[in-house]
Image 1 (cartoon, rainbow, N blue to C red):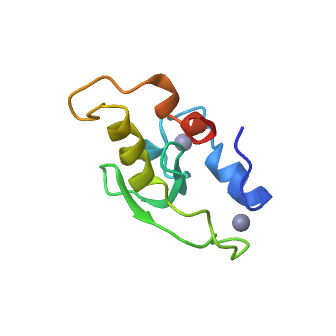
Image 2: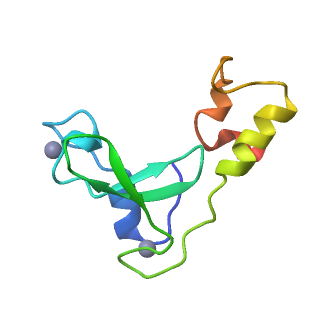
Image 3: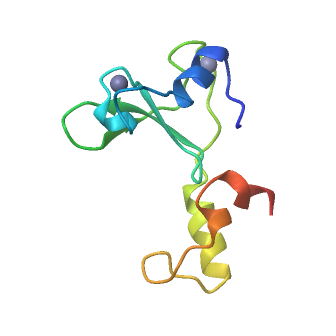
Length: 100
Ligand SMILES: [Zn+2]
Ligand SMILES: [Zn+2]
């Protein structure tokens, strides 16, 4: 389990609800964490899957880790993988690629 800046953030990122399978359909879910990009966002409950990216934690005010989205694409590219066309290796679907 990824550790986050504070307990509240960790609780939110590890949100689980009996009634909703995914955070976008649950009105109580506040934060979406994209592990593979290390990006945090606030969920906008507009019926879709909208997220507003955040750089600071709404609870403790701490600066969140920098997005690794650009690196993610670079790393795949350096392996000759096109994420839109090719199959993305499993370790690139969450934060495991960062430890490669
Ligand atoms: Zn729910
Ligand atoms: Zn925090």
